[in-house]
Amino acid sequence: MTSPLDQYSQYHKDLFTKLDFPFQKGKKILDIGSGDGTDSSIFANYYHLNTHSSDIFCHPNFKKLKSVKFKLGSIFKLSYPARSFDYAFLHDVLHHVDESQQRTTHHQAALREAFRVVKNGGFLIIVEGNRYNPLFYPHMVIMRGHNHFTQGYFRSLISNLFPQVRFKFFEAHFYPRSLIPIFKIYEKIMENLVPELFRAYNVAIIRK
Image (cartoon, rainbow, N blue to C red; front, side, top):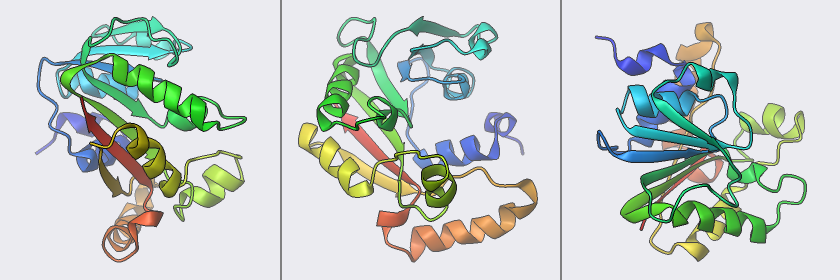
């Protein structure tokens, strides 16, 4: 039996399956740093959320996403009133907000602004790649100079601002189709036998 998530990449299907968050149909979400709009499309068309997106540039895909309301804007000054959304979502955004210097003060400012627009009783959901994951480290970190957070820094940054945070850690990657069965074995090893310190994604779920 097919799922509406099957229309998306293997990576996005895996990521949202493992995120396993109980989004409620009809609720209002802000996808911050929405990039090419894939996550926004999933929120609108799979979870049936009232989906809003914000980024510093508008990807052409948003012209096709009629069910998503897009606004240009910086994470440091979102164009929405306080307590506007049931959910705010950041996917691989935080490590970009001050990419050249990676100042904690800037990361904190971004998080506070994202939390500002969440309703009381709502959730801020943060998904960030882990720098020292074995698959990420060679091609995403060393070759591209991509400065993902370490898990230790991620934990410290989030928990110091939001003591109520709940963390989870899992594997999710783009795989060549022919190698998916092999990499699924790798994922089981990483998620069951290897310390969570090395898992691909750090996730923080914060209730307001």
